[in-house]
Structures are given as structure tokens and as C-alpha cells.
Length: 426
Ligand code: S3P
Image 1 (tube, protein in one colour):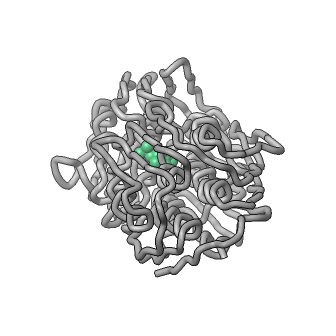
Image 2 (image 1 turned 90 degrees about the horizontal axis):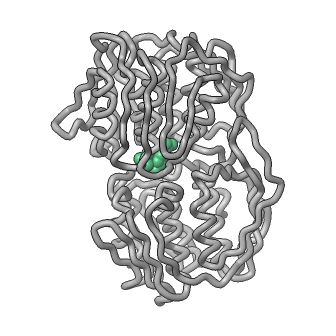
């Protein structure tokens, strides 16, 4: 439980944010497939990435954490070993879906489970393409929910061409990882571009992967050449809370150091700028194919916008924070094509409408796959539920701070992606 008081001043100063969650997962997994030691700098020690660490250890990788540093040594691309027990992905969809892709081609059996939330989430979307490749995967029921067992395939997986029905970086990455072990090339056609961290990092590990238009081709590999060091940029999804709060609180000027600004992730900045936000990029650089920059944000007068389609995968995790910005904007914001929000850590579409309306009555409405926000309504103190969803918790916290305060139930869930969120907030 946490009570957030209203802030009667702007947000000012310079802050650092934790490492990117998506990149941290991939850094652990790919380093575990190399055959030399990799140091991962600015690794996110959030619960989700620690689930990946535990799973990879059980699959045979050597992973040592000493203070802020983490060192990973793999046994080579073909060196994973059969886990002695069930792998627990906790709350982490990325851990589970990517590891389904990685274990599908292995000559051993792996069983996965996860927490109450993950056991409800759809896995057929990744089991389907992996099965087309020849993987043998069984789930608990016809929806293929957890627990899931990946059996030894009868023979080498085959390369396929797969047209993705939903834009999902997790599904895409699972197919790419399985494709490394297939008998020929695998082609994935994306319905809309989703985050491309797997593609970028695999290229840095020497794998052959080609992108042309909406198609991605992955070629089987003999081995991967791990770099000595991977530097993880700050997570733009974590920066989003401060970007929004600084934009809506008058008299704010905040610099967020070293934010990952890979353009498959910067939809939040594009949309906030369209709403009138003042966000500057400073000190841009590129490391391991990933761009980062310091972001400087000033308070601004925001106005409502309408968007959807290809923007959605570029800001899917930032929609709860963006909804807070929209509540302070002038006019209406309509976000189309957000059906995927229903299958996140909780049904975020329902959660936003139910809980955010407690702070700003009547401002939030949803249809089957869109979210409509009426800005400018009166805000009041409220007692809100997070549904143990880290992004709901942090979005409610900034909403309350910019409104008239909020009490949130399970605030602990921020440990999934941002363990020191409340300390920094204070
Ligand atoms: C992620 C992909 C997205 C995102 C999730 C992290 C990743 O999920 O919502 O938080 O690291 O690949 P989908 O692939 O389900 O869109």
C-alpha cells in the first residue's frame, strides 16, 4: 500500500533510470548462447529479468552478479543442458515467450510455469508458429496456458515463412531464436514493426539476420560470437512516467540521462510531441546498435490527439502513462487498436477505465479496441487498485501526484520493472 500526496510544485532536476527491461532479457539470453564471458552493464535487476537469469542458469549458463555488475558465460550456441526442474518465468511474458522459442529446438524436455497473471496469458500465439517449425509443445488446456512442456522435437526444426497476425516482439523473437537452430532460413512477415532489440543484438553477436520492408530473415547459425561487454541503455518505458509527469506539472524542467531511443520504442515521444510536449534529445549516441540520448523535458500545455495502427507497438507499454497525460490535455484523445492491452499483466484497458475514473470521473471510456480520454475533468483523491500490475501502479502514482493524491494497494509490484521507483519519486 502507498499513499501519494499531490505535488504542488514542478518536477526539477537530473535523474537516471534503470536499464531497459527488453534489452536486459535479451542480453542474458544471447550471452548464455556465446562461449566467452560477457559483462552486462546497467542490467535491470527487476524481478522479470531475474526470472530470465534463474531460467538461463537452470539451462546451464554461468551467471554471476557482483554488486551492479553481471557476468554471463555460455557453453556455446549448442551447449544448453536439460533443466533438472520446472522453469519459473514468474510474471514475465518476455522470459516465457522467448524461452519457448529457445527451448523448442533443443534435444531435451523443458517445463515452464509462471505466476497467476502469466498463467492466464495467451501462449498459443507463439506455440502455433513454433509447432509449424516442427516443435512439440503442450499446454495445460486448449488455450495452451501454462504450465507448458516443450518436448524434444522428432527432428531438426524446419525454416518456415510466417505471417504474424499480431504485432508482437515476443512472438517474433521466439521464432527468430528457434530459427537459429532450424534446417534452413526462416522468414517472418510483421503486421506492424515491433521492437527490434533481438535483431540488433543478434547482429552484434555475428548472426546472419536480414531485414527488408516488413520481412525479417534469420539464417541457421553454427555459433555466436559474444561481445566482451553489453551496455544496456535506460528504459524509455520507465522514463515515460517522468516524461509525462514533467510535461503536466507546471514549472518542470527535468533531464533524464541515457534513455534508450531505438525508434521502435519512441512512439511515446512522437505522440507527446504531437500533443504539444516539449522534449529535447541531447548527447545522442549508439552502442551495440542501440541508440540512446539524454532527454530534457519542460512543462507544456497539452492537447488531445487521435492515433492508432503502427504507432501502437511503438508505445504499447506506455499507454497507461500516456492516458494520464491525456487526462490533463485540452480536448479528447482517442487511441485506436489497443486490443492487446487486454492481454498484458492485467487487462489494462479495463483497469485504466475502472481505476483512472476514480481519480477523474467520466474521463476514461473504452470500446472493443480503443481508449477514449476526455481531458480537463475535475480530479479528486481516490483509493485505487493496481491489479498487481507494475505499469498500473506507476501510472496511478503519477496521476495522483499531479491530481489530488492517490492511495494504491499493491505498490510492491513496481519491482517487476522499476525497483527503486518510489525512492526516486520521493
Ligand atoms: C516486449 C514486447 C512487448 C511488450 C513487453 C516487452 C519484449 O510485448 O509489451 O513489455 O521485450 O519483447 P508483446 O510482444 O506481447 O507486444
